[in-house]
Length: 97
Image 1 (cartoon, rainbow, N blue to C red):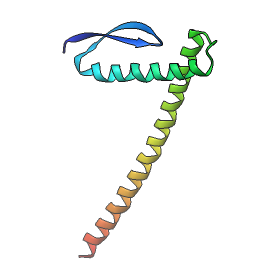
Image 2 (cartoon, rainbow, N blue to C red; image 1 turned 30 degrees about the horizontal axis):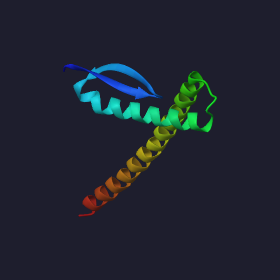
Image 3 (cartoon, one colour; image 1 turned 120 degrees about the horizontal axis):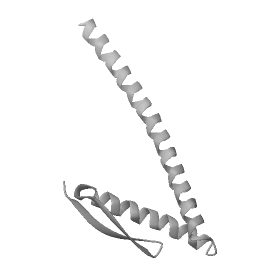
């Protein structure tokens, strides 16, 4: 895979990144999400330093990730439980025939 250079704007500053061609869209999406998160924090407190805005954004995004992973784990457990119940019913139905 070849690498592509992309430019993103985060909190009104330009940053250059290199990424694989197939990662370009997700990197641009991540940059947009980060910029949006940082802009929201800055709008709530315009006197906050860029460093603190960055830290707050990182904490918020990490928190969202952990909540999402927990939710996914819960649903994975629920789906596996449902599959097991269905499989047990199928085995019972097959053995009764």
